[in-house]
Image 1: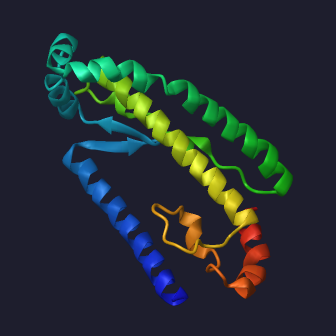
Image 2 (image 1 turned 60 degrees about the horizontal axis):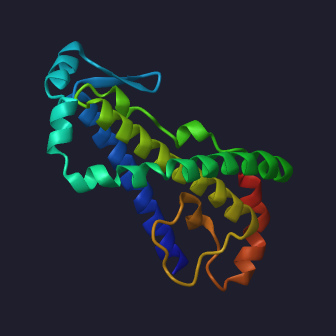
Image 3 (image 1 turned 180 degrees about the vertical axis):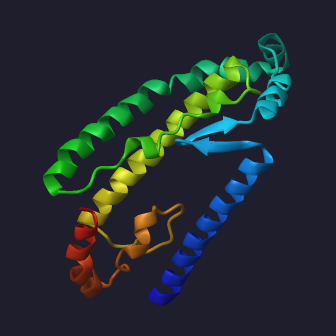
Amino acid sequence: MNAELDRLFAQIHDIEADIEAKLAAYRTRFRYSLTNGKAVFEKEAKQANARLRTSIPRYLRETPLKHLLLAPVIYAMIGPIALLDLGVTAYQWICFTAWGIARVARRDYIVIDRHRLGYLNAIEKLNCVYCGYGNGVLAYAREVFGRTEQYWCPIRHATQIRGAHARYKDFADYGDAEKYRAQLEGLRAKLR
């Protein structure tokens, strides 16, 4: 079973590489390139995007009332998300330093770039910043705790879990005490 799981995890890696190739094709199609990690649109693409921007008054008129009424509930999560961001950052600075684990680069997970899209109005841009930050913090926290799990408890669960982090594939099978003991120090060393 372990070989079969390894094969499936390898397929996931191959699929991720295919996704990156498709993204490169989209960059060409939508006429932008990445320069220093930032999307740079060609002049004509910028102009075309600006023509497709919805004005704020029109956007507000066309937004269902229930969406407008729920906005305060949605944005109330910014406090807990920011606290999680701060807490995870402090956690890894303290604990990872003590354990000798390489720290997670926050900037690799929290990507705020959609506000640069010319076809979005100011409200849509704010929404995109909010969602990019929220999902980025959760991905960042996941990686920090994935590294923590690899250090302390690199054992797969008895049942399938949805959305396992990338490190999970290297963990020992549930119940495989020999593999757990044999690979624990090696997995810890990979984190340094």
